[in-house]
Length: 515
Ligand code: KIV
Ligand code: ZN
Image (spheres, rainbow, N blue to C red):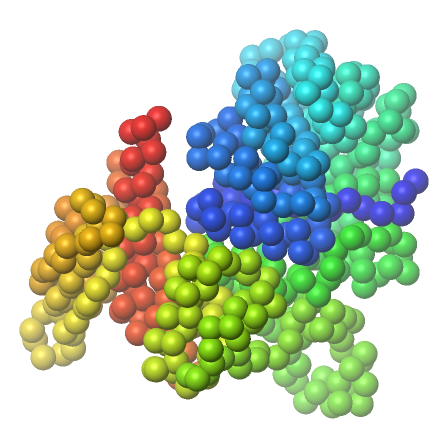
């Protein structure tokens, strides 16, 4: 059996479909390139039949990466498979990933079909996919709650039809490690043609066992792990890529298995995801949380001084966590910034570098030290923006305890009629607090009144002059959108995030209308 586990990253599919993790197309391409740099073997770029937006994203990602396989998900439905193929075929090494549920509860309640009919659908789907590409993955959704003998029949049939990867998902995070390992061992032993396929696992984290189940399955012979950065995904998420990889790496003595992941790219990748989706890493997050390498108690600190191995089973350097470095100052030039951005893994064109340069310069006027994290926040804010309908031009806010209700004066640039020649629109409005005053003034200027869901502010770096990164979720008539903005003034950051959410919402409405 191979001593390498293939790492299949589904951050852009299972991860992206979870609440609050939506990314626009340029953010997805940027993440895909980072995943390539991280050294994963396969990325699942999306679910092309889900929407035109998903289709375009998968197709563009397929065209944008070179050294990794690109998978597109599809139901076991021929038209879905065609759509997935249409999107991934542009990749150097494309994969079709098709799935159907095999548990009694799913077959009865989702499909109202008998097991034989499901088996036939799986056969047909894989036969069709294999007529398009030799690289076909089949997933038996809810495998961990399926009857083992039925799973054997389905897996045998789809391998016969040409599936080269068999994925066994613990879709609802129900399995226990010992039991899940046993299932994988049972399938590899009892499926007569199992040697013709790679067995894969995809473990959800509902009981907090996603990583444990994945590792147990690898011990039992699985040679592909489906994971996501920071464990994002449906409900409680998926097994976290960085945890699975570092367990295999740190305990090589126990597993004796390699991956192709460059572990020093783990922290930069997780940080990139966290800033892109505007969800901070918990300080206690294994491997990449702020406390993961912090030693607080005297006894621990003493041990660390004497020998780091007393309390450190891996080094911060091994996951790419270096001390924060000052990158750029008031007098740095555009070339220096361009080089720095390349080093940080951002492949930007001249126009994007110029935009980031202007933003860095204006930040340097207000903030003494500019760190990697500051530059990253600005890149995500200015370089990967969709075309804006509105931009915040000026803003002033009054709040306090004087008895006068909080109010805000807002000037926006309005690009609705002319992309290169905005008109200025301005208004003043009251609110319950300063942020509410800004948001309601913006509402009256753009003429919509979306519902505000989540609103969060996080410091981009430490220090009193740190930038604030704001994320807002808004919705209108069932359409949801997320906006992000950063600034050293958190009220300005909030206004930018809110406008960004509105720009995205307007785009979603437009896409819906066109579709
Ligand atoms: O959780 C699951 O079963 C899935 C499949 C589509 C692989 O995401
Ligand atoms: Zn899943």
